[in-house]
Length: 297
Image (tube, rainbow, N blue to C red; front, side):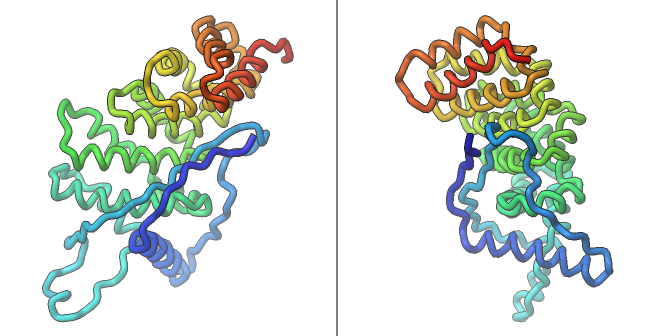
């Protein structure tokens, strides 16, 4: 089965900022003799039937952050400040201040880092810099708020998509599991904000590529959340992501035996397999039911 890749345009200015950040980082490593080769292909190994999902959304931002070691006086004199590198953007994410002014700085960083994560070759570098911890700290803070501002909501979505991209790498999957963030992702599946549902499903689909991720989804009550989503009137694209995740889990023998007797799941899948309302959903559910009802071990 082909991989599912969700794409959209990335603005030229932001792409340039992302590439500059990578090049400055690598050049610094070269000068100190500590450069490490970046290897591609960080996505999961295994059968081509597994489906992974990655996001590369349009990241247009006119935010011109004036802090981070860039003085307004120098720019007024016509001097050009040094280009930012990965460390600069990570420092923005580490700010403890969550006021709107600082959230805008975090948002700028998240947008650039998200565009970088569209390239799997960047995964080893981002993992080495412990980006996962920074993402989860910011997401946990925003999710803990009873009321969020619009800019906080946007930051959460960008960080969620960034996390989803990184979860195509098994190292990142294990970090998220170790940080006990999978239950949070499962709780967001049926969030009233469809964008929150979307990034949580992206994360879970990539987590389901490996046995550890599939097991963690099950013990985090993810199957119950998938059933609720499938039985709801929510958009087809969300249900399709959930079905791809269940298919991935059915392809792993150890994970399969943990869900193949779930009557609620089998009932929900059977509904889509026979409804004929959407051929993609019919194909996915038919394949999944075949796996779940097979006696092969």
